[in-house]
Image (tube, rainbow, N blue to C red; front, side, top):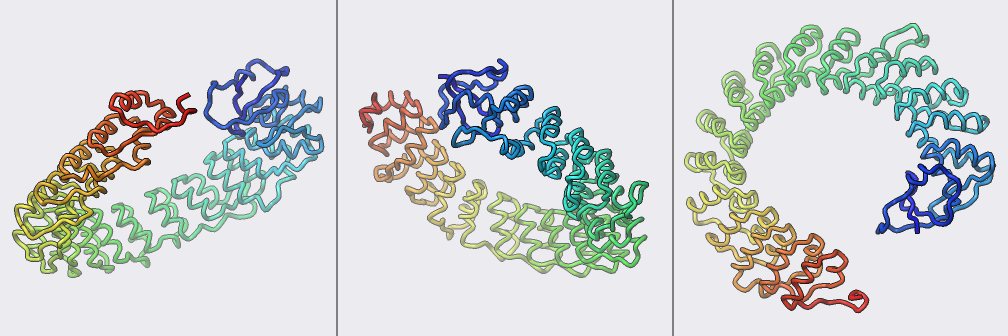
Length: 537
């Protein structure tokens, strides 16, 4: 039996019977490896060599011509191989036009266009596909030979496709051919965000070919340029389309730290002012120069977010500047976030210089993220303390040193029942050992199950060895055993059998996946293999 490769459109299609005349290289392109496990469909080889999916998508132009001229074309579908009547032929060909364009079979397009001159080609779709695949010769062919078939309603989409292709020559050609020089807002914004200044200017500025006038600059153009750090376009919009320079543009420049351009735009557009977001976001991103300049030259002010964000990010110089030069202050969140992120110097400054304080979230956050020195400072110098969940939060993040410190520092904390299984999820062996041996957390079946699922064999071994009889009650589910067999994890299988966590294995599953070592291990250790006679055969 000969197994044949599919055309790019069909999936898992195989063909049988006698060969017909076809180029030898075509035959070899179809041949697949034997023994595929995929579900197959079988068709006559005589249908394959004249099938549209094969001839069109592989570009066999000569064979296509012969088949059409001799009325031998056959359409091989997913369900059946059936002959195609001449009257229906182009309807089937049209389905595959975008593949012909995609693969660049230019001669085939020329032939088909001549052969089916009077058919509806949906030329707009052909042009759009040609632009998408950057087939400029196809674009020009359709424009020059079938231009009259393009409805005006498709002009905007064609122009957008040409613009996004970023080829200035093909864009100019397309616009001039269609005599259409407009583009939709979303496509225009995309061009702005990508920094294609020459294409943006082409739509906004008059030129010799543009007889219908230029398009109006969309209101959010400068905002999009600011968000994507496109200074050249921002300068252009500022000089030529000043109405697009808004408060949001200035705030965005402050956030991104473009100090030179920010000063220039503020000086040029005196009626546009920043909002409180300018200093807030500049402080968050560590832009001290901008924070200082806006404080001295702008009336916009800021909010408590400025100091809170600066503390969260660890910008001590900005925290100090805001404290000494502004009156907005901060909230408890400043110290909470600084502690959570381990910014000890910021924590100390806020503690010694401000009165907002913090909550238990400060110590909890420092502990769970393993910031031991920050946690030590908070417990030594502040009275807020920590929550009764601090051990759970710390254990779940694997912060073993912090966990040990808390154990030495206090004796009134307890561990939640699901904390051990959460640690098993992430493979925190040392944390699990500490919880079991120091905090006497009981080992439960869920913890063992999670360690098995995530293949943490050292954790499974520890939990089974220290479970005080839990392993005798714990039994692996068929799904777990199947997963172990599928992943070929013989070491895990041996460990689980050592602790008698299962009584039998499925021979069918072992054989299906070729796990001969596991079968041999099962036989050597007298593990019951559940199977049927046909599986043995």
